Image 1 (spheres, rainbow, N blue to C red):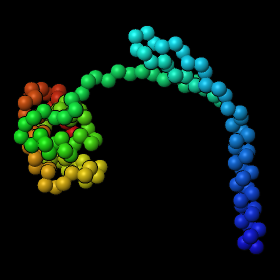
Image 2 (image 1 turned 135 degrees about the vertical axis):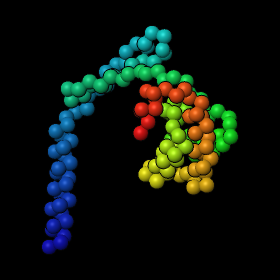
Image 3 (image 1 turned 135 degrees about the horizontal axis):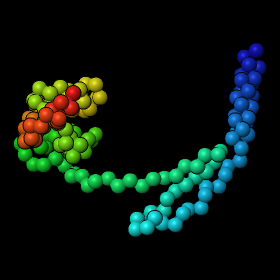
Length: 146
């Protein structure tokens, strides 16, 4: 009985796969590449299939510093934060207190499982607090901190 059931299930799965492939139809060719976009050296990609056309879009990202600026404990931040964050992303955060930075770093470690050793947390918080203290005390920036 088990052998018959196995054959029926296997045959049903094969039939379902064939029907799914048949429903998708034959593959369509990707549309010919368009000429290069002026001045970019990049050809816009386009693919059409199943009544849908997908077009690529080029975006330009600003330059980013590869590491955090030198300062006391910069090594702790470079060693532990750059795996997930760019330097500019972290350096453009609102002006925060040491307690707020402590909570954020602990959240990165505990909630998001960032591999930050507990011994590095005080140095990271000290660095971010010092950088944050150099920001202008701007009400709009302070009210955006969460």
